[in-house]
Image (cartoon, rainbow, N blue to C red; front, top):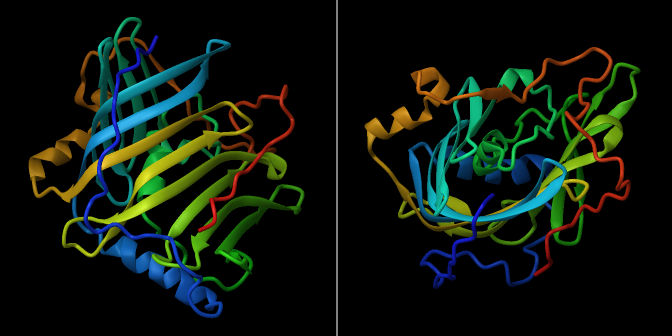
Length: 304
């Protein structure tokens, strides 16, 4: 069981970008909207270290609801390299991702090690992990939106009063169009991603991620969210992450953290794979579904 650890808020950091203010100018074309996000993402061509990480949330485990409140540090390098270490009085949690796989390791009694390969996830966003390192890496990637927006595979653009919305879909095995992802991008400063919703089979929302409090990373010119909330739908759990500091970390040795404990040959005890190969019948079917709560609420980011 997780044990709560007391924590307190921190004063605003220099470089904060406020969302207070009017929408800037008339609607922009899709290439301009995407280009701003991608330029910010591309500028983060360095190893990022986040300190004072606070992780708070709830998740379903063994047919019961469990809560946690942890602290630690994070390393990240685009596009998928991530290492997160969280601690509390009962033990340590390590989660990570690299180009091949992702893992989640609870290092206390009883210990458990969960892992999977990215290519085997088949867009199944409901793998049974309290904190998904692969999904967190995608959210922290700060963009990487497609530059080729034409043709059947390109997103559709919807312009709202506060957000540009990019809508992604695909053809299922019956040639029906189904949603795969919706991304909301601010129409006011800093013109960056505010919300992502991932969809499973039949257009069912399965995960929503919300990003807030963008601040600059030192003098790099890169803006990154200091607060992230991820919800597993419908009401299967949530996690809120906040980062006190973010800085460039020029330490090549730190990249060794992106090797999984399994790859390093460490004693991880019993392990369980949470990925699964794609199937022709249902390429986007989530790994599990909670059918007891059919109503799914997707929350839009707060205005202003």
